Image (cartoon, rainbow, N blue to C red; front, side, top):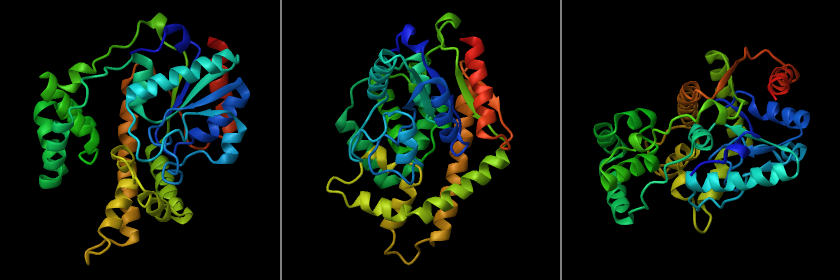
Length: 321
């Protein structure tokens, strides 16, 4: 499954690690370039997951049309192929209105899928998944990740042990096909004449970004992240496997589920854990964007105004068409 070349050529991309300032810049860019925003984020798809995903607020969404936000209930599953199908349909509608699709987000897997296509893989083997989930419950996430390290080292390096949904899928693909997921996912970049010209990612200084991440996590708790997760967990169908793995949501859920234990961590320790894992996630995002040859880094200091960054990006789009 691949995006059509003619459609991809009309798309703009603004990516970057979490908390680097993509939302403010994307809104100003959309206004400047007559664009509509297509979310490139695997968790803002879900209704009710607002605080922990730093989802654009209603006021922000009112400034420019947004797509692929709040389209799923938290219990629903969603694949990369599902995302590509929906994104292509959105882009066709946007182009038909004579606007430009502007992809914005930090999910590297989605970005690579849009740029290079996706291996859809074998259909889910629910009996096998049940076995692997039982292994997870019995032996823990580290056990599954150790198995993945043995059969597919590159994927094991890319996936955190706590990303159990994707770890299980990688093991499932290997057992069903006899080949590691890495081999299936070795899509090469399109030829130069088929690539979109405007794929940018914000590359900030590490210390500046890490401080913003720490501040953002604290703000999320002040805004009511604990209550948000409680409410989601009390929904009739609860949270699905994908939503439960959302950064911040998984940690809070684990914390809530262990609340009866005398060894329960304090809220301060929970905040620190989420800050640490978010910084680790940002580092992995940096690796994703740096390793995609289609991406052009925009080095920022963190001191630029939104207006200055808009000029920097918009001038590139204007000059290169």
